[in-house]
Image (cartoon, rainbow, N blue to C red; front, side):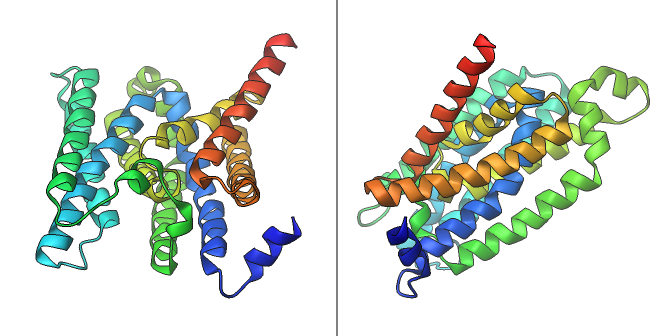
Amino acid sequence: MNGFLNALLNPEMPFIRFALIAGLLSSIPFGVIGSFVVVKRMTYIAGALSHAALGGIGIALYIGEKYHVEFFTPMMGAFLFSMLAGLVISMAVISGKERIDTVIGVIWAAGMSVGLLFISITPGYVDPMSYLFGNILLLNGSDLALISILNGIILFFSFFFYNQLLATAFDEEFTRIRGVNTVVYQIMLIMLISMTVILMISIVGIVMIIAFLTIPPAISGFFTKRLRSMIAFSILLCAFIMSAGLFLSYLLKLPASSVTILLASLIYVICFMFKRDY
């Protein structure tokens, strides 16, 4: 424990502090949006948006290496592609003419394919592992700034329109009868999920996004059925798992993202067994 604290306070090792700060900052939108994802059963939409982001990452890496465009970073590419995928899914929701699961499947597969294609033709060697599985220790000050900005946007819309999102999440048909345009708030939620996905890519990676968006709120759901309580407990649980996962990875000298997800999964299994028996 002392070794980890010394490393955390060591001015020559800022990446550990950045990792801890990023984990704590991200716990808030993960807990908020993840709770809506679990309640609305939108896990597959979150999965499609996260995997579509790989397309933007691949294109950004290619343009950056081939044409030396430094401002178009992989995070920016992921943001644009994830938001574009969110718009496509939103259009499918509005039209109601296409099966949502089909649209999600196409976006999921196309995003991954585009990303891997551009990564393969990018000059030099590009390791996609850090994007697929994340590396929280590679974060820097600019990443923290981006996380903070997206945090603010997500929290503003989540809490300003909380009642409408709550009504749409629990009883969409009744809310529509009461004159609320539920399509607007469903689209808003999809776009908020897109933003949350961007936060998570650099922390746990594309492959593990679904797990971290769903596991903490699912654990919270074992102990409370009220959305406000679920959100609060999810935020605290996310913060604990992020911090403990970083500490264990440092102690065991293992990848932080993998240790964090395994810790979250272990807590879920223990809570599931406890609730089943009692």
